[in-house]
Image (cartoon, rainbow, N blue to C red; front, side, top):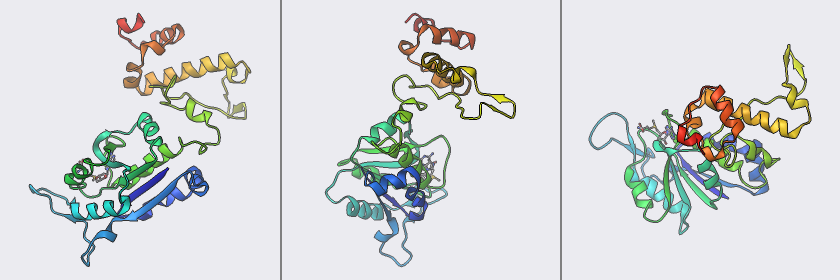
Length: 259
Ligand code: SAM
């Protein structure tokens, strides 16, 4: 997969040299190219922003410099373009999975009040352009958001995770973990400062371990993410799940319970 990232702070992306993503780059699974937006400016100050039309505080990133940069980076190619912005569609595991199947992604990192909207309109005529938010809070720039997305996407590429099964069991994974967060995990020793590992995990009984994990995932989802629990597909809930949800006093619509 090829990833191009355009930013006025290329130095933000040094974390992509290490760990899983760094190894994937070394192996050639990921081809990451980071570009300095200011390389496409023409004034001595390398200006990338200007005052907003309509007035108000802050600055807006200029369309001409973005246009020149994107044209130079993509040539005649057609990457999928991702523009991080708090006003975008939410970045989810499902979207990460979808993006992991693309051969080429282009990330355009905004700063200040964002990028002049005509840049997205212009490229949407020839590329698939997604404006994407990593959460309901406002960062100073798109760089950290892109790091988040690249890590989430990169670990889904074939061969990047040591054990591909770990992505299948993760929180939000498609299938049985859809709309669920993962429960607690434990390692050795069996007792630490008086805290014991749940006995079932040491029982060697795969069925019981799977059931316990599912129960804990449901319990945690109800506790920490009730909006996700409310969106559980009734068709994915078995009798045991429903009994547990009742015990947790989690209301599921009666018609859903009938399924
Ligand atoms: N005025 C914008 C608004 O209220 O929607 C916020 C601009 S923010 C200060 C500057 C840049 O940070 C954005 O253009 C975007 O690239 C990035 N950014 C900030 N929060 C983000 C988020 N939650 N998700 C993705 N990108 C974000």
